[in-house]
Amino acid sequence: MTREPMDDLDRLYARLAPVELPAGFVAEVMAQVRRQQTRQQLLAWCWLVVDFLAALVLIWSAFVIGRLLAVGTFDPGAASVLLDPELMLAAPDLWVLAVVELAPIVAVLTLVAAAGLVAVATRSLLAGMSRRVGLA
Image (cartoon, rainbow, N blue to C red; front, side, top):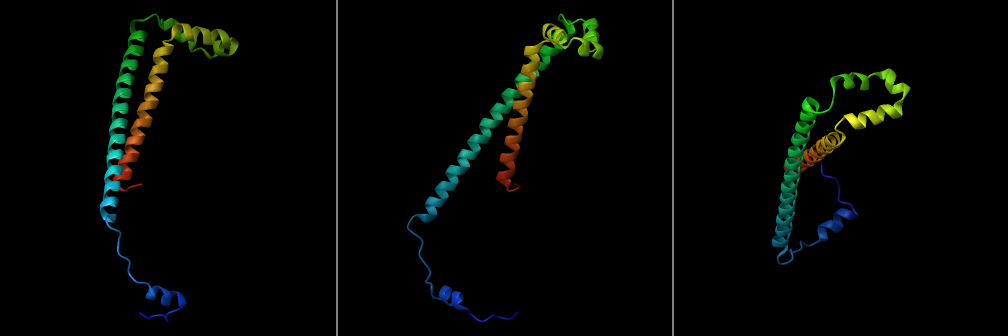
């Protein structure tokens, strides 16, 4: 290994004297790290609670939709008529009105919203955990 000759910048760096750390510097840095770690743990717990509650709502809304479709007013004959593509294209406004009247729209919207919230919360939890272990 060859050593290159020192240039002006190397000579300037060589003249620099080591600097002492300010009093309490290490303690302050460690306190900031501890606060950040506590904040990240609190955020992870919050996302975990949101994820759990959204999963419960998802389970409940899936149960309600299943129950409504099994014993509700949704007639199997109506399902075949509603899924007829010719009817959809012939009278789309009447078709949408029939779907709204027959299908459990509130339960379906709740199901979709809960599924989206579960997806967002789970992704946030996984992203936080991957940052924590240094994968991201």
